[in-house]
Amino acid sequence: MILSKALRAVRLHRRLRPSEVAAAMGLPIRTYEHFEAGSGRVSYERIASFARATNSDPLAILASVPLRSPELAVRCADNKLMTIAMASLRDLELQLEDELEMLEARTLIGAFDRLVRDLVTHVRSRDVFAETWLQEKAARVDGALIPERLKPGKV
Image 1 (cartoon, helix red, strand yellow):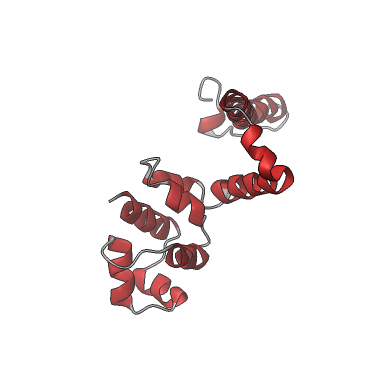
Image 2 (cartoon, one colour):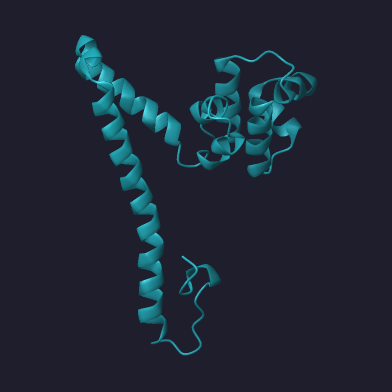
């Protein structure tokens, strides 16, 4: 079950024992174990409680199910990507109200495609910047080591 894998992956990523998460959620350990295994009661409130206990993104945990990616929950645990996205969509709804339905699918697809490209470019250019900077500056320091992942051809 994807949700169960996502919950376990987040807990392991945070290096927490089931008993620690159970205590933080105010649940008996057995109840928590059933929840994490996917056999216990699942609700948004319980997922939000888990997210608070593990400092993760409850909406990324939920989104991991339709996206079929338990890894998404871990990848968004620190940056809270899905919560930010949903908060931004809520702002859009509040600003447009009934006019929200006037947005055409073509416009939305174009906007989200541009956003994805911009974010990918941002992340990828950070590594290029670091690589260039290190290559230029490291030569000034005798014995400087460039991290393996930033060596030319590794980006």
